[in-house]
Length: 480
Ligand SMILES: Cc1cc2nc3c(=O)[nH]c(=O)nc-3n(C[C@H](O)[C@H](O)[C@H](O)COP(=O)(O)OP(=O)(O)OC[C@H]3O[C@@H](n4cnc5c(N)ncnc54)[C@H](O)[C@@H]3O)c2cc1C
Image (cartoon, rainbow, N blue to C red):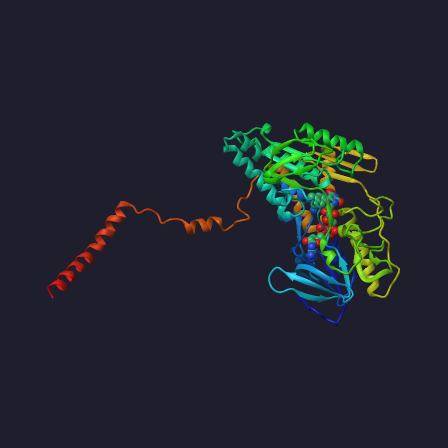
């Protein structure tokens, strides 16, 4: 659809962020609204939605990266999709500023706004962190991390210096939450399988390290399951440090709060998330953690009551958890909430557009947790039912395979898994993705080939008549 910047023909619903919440909300709005009833505009810097729970499996090579993202334009045909960043929101004037990758920023008017900009990694002022670490929230990061770990195996296979080799093969993961444990476990599983293909490396050369500040990992599962996760990681050779902080990682030299120091070439930061800081540049009400203040019906509220025309949910919002769970009484930032909040949001906006006021309150009791820890390995907790190993792994794949939005993507993801079981995990890596012109630039820069003796002789012969001609001219000039 063409973008009509400031139309008064019909109301515009501006969806800020085409992630899990924004994408599913827009799809639901497309279905619930009549044609021409409203314009749905989705703005996101990425032209796709990322199904983040599959990132650890993308990194491990069990899922093709493109299959874990959903192209917005293909699946939001009745919406305007704008690839750009919302950089400012003035809700009092009902307009937002959008910055495309190329070209000038522009303003877009709206009637309703849906704040679905998610979260960003929560960092700490640790020396070296911003320079050396990578987080694990984007498809590009998952792909880069996979290629990096596999490249380090290649590098280490020919490094002779022991200290250098140890550094190349030391991978540090900070944060023992859901994302941290899954990414470490999947990548460790992949690396151990890959190392078997090297004559000069053994499993004992690999060092995976988990650093967690709390006394336990994965607050999403019960104590016994969390203890089992730590034990099973230790049994796989992972160094798990609990109640330990990363204090410094300048120049990839790790210093821990327990006094230990070592070098690590790869540092992955997974120590929590915070609401998208974009919200700070808006006149919308935020709580003390920077989240948009929302009611259970997903309308934004300030001290004076409802802020008309503003809606929020997902990771960037503080939505009361009516089920009685949640941290501090609010829904925790996870996909389980985002995907269920989206239909409530779309339904309530549709009602608001049609003059209704009997808005539905969002309430969902967590159904539990499933996590993959490598091929045939997992942990799950559904209420009081606990599963470990292959059963939990199958539950993890079954749940997430079905939860990926759109049938087309579900089919692709299940096909990946089927092929993986049939043919084995794909451990091919791509190098130089960040510098695709490198090879061409090197070719263009290279010295001309040294000439072969026959070519030199032929050239000399060719220039002989010219030399003779020059000599004749010279003699004639002297004579005159
Ligand atoms: C590795 C990993 C594993 C996870 N596993 C699980 C799991 O197993 N189960 C579970 O329940 N949850 C899991 N989660 C959490 C879950 O993915 C998130 O809670 C969920 O995606 C939140 O949805 P959201 O729409 O609020 O945010 P997101 O899905 O993050 O979407 C936010 C969108 O906003 C866009 N955006 C950002 N800034 C701007 C801007 N300025 N303008 C416009 N758009 C912007 C982003 O590009 C993004 O597309 C996991 C997360 C990670 C990182």
